[in-house]
Length: 132
Image (spheres, rainbow, N blue to C red):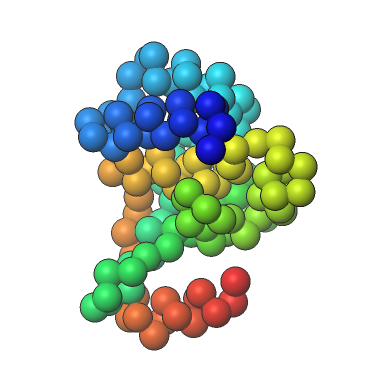
């Protein structure tokens, strides 16, 4: 984990512990993530992050709305994976970013309690995951 990742993790932990974001934290996140952070905040403000929870297991995945006119929805694990094109191109292939805007939106929404929670059966969740 590089220095930028360590700084980001420290800020995320602070946000998660207080369930709010300070101006200093916003400045740091903007520095680390640039326009992706701005885009992520717009997604969160528009209630574009769903946390799909399987019952009875409690396992979950995020479904995040994209910003294009098509309003695609991408499944993601906030810290590790997103099904969007940018994740594979900018993060995996080129290593230019720490994460995509959908991952940022998911983590931000979860940290401040802004997710739309959707409960499904474990079978339905497994079916969703099988399509990744």
